[in-house]
Length: 235
Image (tube, rainbow, N blue to C red; front, side, top):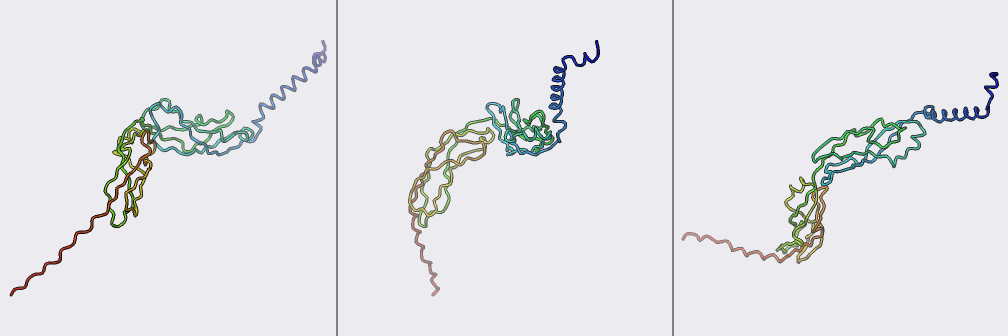
């Protein structure tokens, strides 16, 4: 059998196979021929799998700065709005812990490399969630009108039930209302207001609206002063 017959047998099929192989090679090696680029992004931080009955009480950064590297085409197709850094608290316990951030914590495609993250670690403090009922006190501000005197201040309801970090609630003896202005007042009045939340993470479960009743009466007139006594001279 002549070599030429072997080479040119099913020539069309062989040529098609060669074309497919070349096209496949071109596609697979395309990214290697592209220029490599780097870009910076500012992305949000997500805390996931917070254990039931606990809450994060430490401040968290608004966003993280990441620098990524890859071929031009994948970087151009990257949607910054879909990027985020994820910290998983599945096995966390109450207390303070530092979580280092690595490339695996950023949800980038496989053909994009994370080369820098700032900050490089996140400090998290977990506390157990507690409830507590506390008395309410009215926060009065300002000076009454001249000749007026504060007689009595009452609030309704007298107490509120709050929910929040256990350590924070343990330090709270009472709750205050938002400021109630008495400046220039000379007559009794009532005002509906809300509670002033004492710390981050604390919320009101019962008793958010508070009616403050302020009783004002005329101040008693000043007592007359006795005239000075004169000393009798010796005769």
